[in-house]
Image: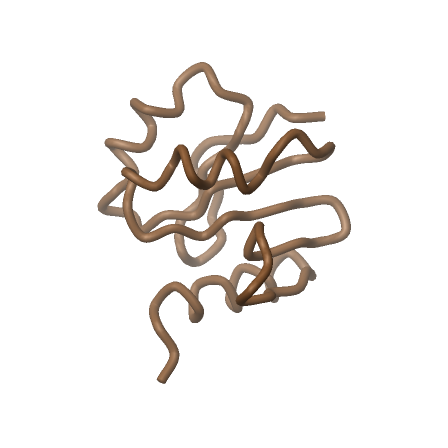
Length: 95
């Protein structure tokens, strides 16, 4: 049975024309984008480590109810925020 994490990661991978790999970090890699899919805002630090210092836009995908906490935590960071459907809530400024 697929978890909400896996369903969201597959949906985002389809939207960004990328690839979801369950056992690799970050969860979704596209031609010019990387996305770490997490369940709670408490996992933002882990997601930032997974995204590392690579080039190109990087996002953390969280459920919509976690966005207020995540936006506070991520203010001033270059990493973007998206919801589980792939809609961007905070743009990534990574180059």
